[in-house]
Length: 497
Image (tube, rainbow, N blue to C red; front, side, top):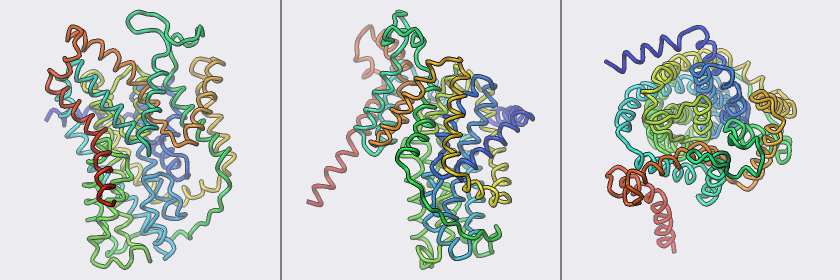
């Protein structure tokens, strides 16, 4: 009953005209971002982060959330019509969706993608509503040793999961931790690693780093390394589904939701794994699998799209309750929270309950808005693809520059922005993940403070982490994340040999 009351209060906040407007704008921007290949929600949110200096916390978080799950809806449009996934989570959708489009069934593919996204998003939001407060209530009982181990767990999983190489992920993490140390020491007040530059005494703004690493680096990388690509567009049929399509789609929506949601709650590699699992499941369960890979099977679109959206919505559980981001965009949302002095974690439901419940309520509202936006306006979204790439990336650089300069009117910030952008290009060129840098910057200073507090509790003894059951459990989990994948790979190689 308490959860119901809190949710109703959240709806009262989210349904105010200004918050509804921000939700609608976020959903529209997110859908457009999803439609445009190469510009994911992480880039869009990073580019728009500077609005946190001007907009109310609740409104901006609703706006960013709208961009996040709106991009998942929009990504299916280009996957189906152009065989060009707007988002990595839509790669599997392209496999069957584009074949359906070439067979004259683009409308049915787009319809099952949009409705499946709505069904999965709604079910996943209900599960977030029910389970997030329970997990937060449990996590409130944790102390400094557990908090430090929880952050160590976040460092390990994010570094190992958000890149193809654990070593590269760890290097990126340590870059973030090093940048997080710049500024004044939290306890002694001594300047650290500022090089005598007074602008660095307050540290480097997380917004500046996120915009540089994602938005500026994305634009510069496209200019330097990506050539022109010829795109072909399939004719768009009317957006409707036959009775047979409905009969095949609804079980796939439910199965996709069941597969995707658990993957969103754990640091398990984003939406790629659940979408591929859903596709494999649908192909195996299909009574007639001859359409798969030939004319296009509607289940191969319905299941992965549902899994994609369920996983995206579920990422809010570890983000809000534990402060652990399980995707690039969630890492930037973590930075957005911190811009307001809000730290996601076990205390969030108590310290910023109104914001959290308004954000959860906005997910219900946003799902309805996205269904309305995606079905009738598909033709309009497809026209966005005609924007020339030079204009598109020039716009991103202008937005990023104006946004960062508007925060403090500092020329030093602009120089730093483009230095970080060049670093982001180098990292992308050599396949270093950028999300661990942001996570290291945000959680590094917090982990340092919790480590000092934990050692104070243990009177300087490191055994304090082994004496408390929960922190010991987290140590075991961290070691398992680091050791088990390598052990499994070693044994599989020995069997092959």
